[in-house]
Length: 321
Ligand code: CP
Image (cartoon, rainbow, N blue to C red; front, side):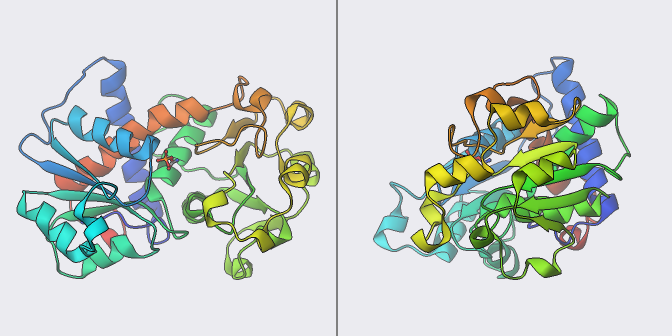
């Protein structure tokens, strides 16, 4: 795999390859093998132009568990504030020996620009770009769903027949987009539920069902209910119902939680707005996979870095060329 830029261009085999390698990585963690020597001598740069807790720290943990050296770059406090461009920033980091660049950026398409511009030779991993994609989040979500429904060793299995309902601020969500492409490639049936003002205009071209009523969607008995964060920082007031109306109509509260079928799970990529899109009852319930998702994120990111820096170069789809 040369880069990991999106899930839209990942093939079923490419996605399963990443999930299966992540299973291998999770096995080593279960066996308390704290560090693998696989990426000794490689340098991974975390290049973050937007804030992050989970993604940045889990890429750092993943790289270190594979024995890579890690350089953390945050735009805050850097020469970006003096006007330094993405090209010059990336080339500066490559001059310090970067073999892989993990980039989060507010502009949709920034990771692809970095990967295709010829500015750097390092492999590029998209850690979230604007409202476009967040591929490793979707991969860790798929990994979590597969593990919950098909058990500890679910290597080789896709998600055929599982029903996943994604609820909330779809318009601004790179997590929703990456999940739609990946989960449907893996055979899941995906339904989106959102206020009409938070549904993207091009959604009719997406391979999903659309609903506007969360109670009707819950009555359909989804296997996984994925609540999205309301992205206040990207919100135009015109889009958003009031917070009170939003939590009443589209929030997952104790009453809705109680109506989910016995085996269904509740997911959230984090960070959560407790009391808005998800109540504490739901976030902390035994159905919640929120912390499992975080744990699984390290294994999935170990797999992505391994395939980028040590694995085969052609197995994971268009970006695996
Ligand atoms: N889910 C996610 O991307 O979280 P962070 O913004 O904390 O990385």
